[in-house]
Amino acid sequence: MSAPKILDLGSLKQACKSCSLHDLCLPLGVGDEELQMLERIINRKRPLQRKDHLYRPGDRMTSIYAVRSGTVKTYTLTDDGQEQITGFHLPGELLGLDAISDGVHPCAARALETTSICEIPFDRLEELSVRIPGLQHQLFRIMSREIQTDEHFMMLLGKKASDARLAAFLLSLSNRLGIRGFSRTEFNLTMSRNDIANYLGLAVETVSRLFTRFQAAGLILVRRKLITIYDLDGLYTVAGTQPVEDLRNHHNGNGKSPPM
Image 1 (cartoon, rainbow, N blue to C red):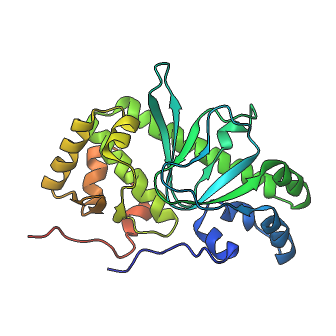
Image 2: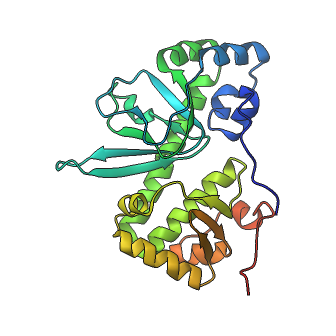
């Protein structure tokens, strides 16, 4: 099995090849001079440690952020002070876009593990978009894609049974990691079973039981936090969705057969 790719954190240009920022940093036709202008406004923040907050509800929005490595969860607080998880953000994904309209963050963002972040001051980004043709359009495209992804998954949560929800969640992680150049069929679940249950609207006992059921059916192998997917098509069947053709035919050489 070929090893999953690791983000090259030593070079912005290389890192952005596996990042949503690729669409901002390297839009069509941008030369080295423009790239240097964009690079100068990006702040590579000191890594967040597990449980550190990137921002909290009500914080003034000054920047958007990209996850370079690690995982960040976003959540709101219910009236009784309980967390309601709204998303998990993986390497190459953007945070803070939902604060652009009101200028304050409506939710909290907290690291699930040691996490490296790129910070892009929004006012500087707006200024630069006037000087670099196509940059603003690329930002709009990224925002639209993020909204579409959220809407699609919320639709699944609203209509699917518990086993379909978990299957759709695993497929979502697989697809999002695969797009960034990581393995689609083997990855660590950096979020806890409690967090997964919270996000999917299920009891934690149900989530644990479903992992056991999926493994018994030969769909996946669970080794602590490491998930190996043996049957992508089987997971799509459980989720009740159709795979994108590219994902059906491109498993990065990581397809396996269950042990006898």
